[in-house]
Length: 286
Length: 258
Image (cartoon, rainbow over all chains, first blue to last red):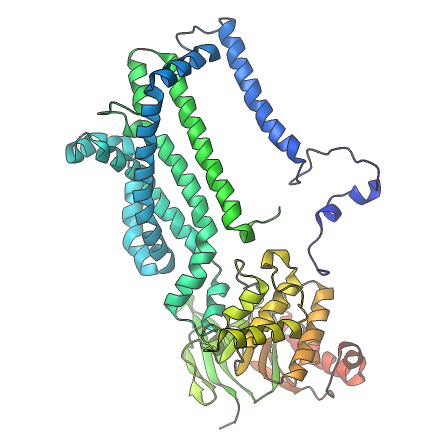
């Protein structure tokens, strides 16, 4: 590999000059990688500082525990809910709703997004409608969906669908459009038909981008959970938060928010991890 | 009628669908490439040379005129005309070997025959040992080697090359010119080669067409009567090379001052 591509060492000014002596760790070079322990350590430290500030603020009674309970109160609430089983019932109900709602919108968004990204006709057909709906607030559909679908899980799926699908389909369209034109054209010169190019060139080329869209949209599904469980629910993480609000049980609210945050983070990492496993060829060095 | 493998006859390319915004990219252009001939198209940037190549490939529509390939009008892309682009067009999810094999999808050859052809072409472009590497592990020059191997492996009757070395650094570029020269001298095939590098065109070609600035027309046709086999060092130090270089550069300069 002799030609082109500067090695990362050569692009770091001063790296060669300093030679073999242990170079001090430079953390603030523009767009330059830093040691992994610093990268992870910084993230952990920030969360630790945040938790510490929260603890101090509540233990010293800077804020009333009614408005902001301390970490200990939230932990106690977690223990209560875990032993009574409330937490697990809520978790199950919410994960189930999110999974179904997201899968339904994804099952529709993928083929429609692919059609829109490849064929101007389909883009022209769907885009004005999709653009119109995606600006409509999902929360405003709550009363309508209850009228149409009743108070069961189907209504929760519908809210998640409305919140996710119309954005997801546009993102997938864009993922497909990022496939370079030259790559498609060169495939024609091998004698492939449009269908073959779609299947064996455009789809694999767009897949990493689409996978990233999955990661982002499932994150949105978590944020729409509270909206979906706003009304007519009797179990679920979002429902627990809404109910706690009525009784000013702020420790429950914060616990619910934290659990949603942690689960959202976990799914995010799951997608990032599987991305690296599935598409090692798409990883770019910075 | 002039005879040739590829005949471009009074071809026009007009971009834009509104009358007042029309841009004439190629104007009444004619040229011919004979069997097993290496022909280059040079000209100032934006003169429509790539557009012409895309029309010959069938990837761009022709506004007026005809392009005949082996006597048949070009109406679309086909496996009879291989193409190498300036941008990297390798499939990043496939290894070097799989990228080259991909071009044989429609060849009807069995797996073992395909494998033999792929190996032969990997060797031809000097990438033995990199069969299992992925494009993101290769340098720019190596990627273009794969692209050339991929365009040759299915034995198209003609090769269309659109500034294939345009994105490479100077050193790699010279290596690649030498490589293409060797490959072409070993496996003669018909080539239409677009470049803005006059030395590259002189080194490789039998004939050069010089184009005018937009709207692109043929300004001059120059026969490169340098002896073959050529190589970089000897050919470029030939006094005739210098004279031809001067001639072509003068023609292009006359177009470039705007």
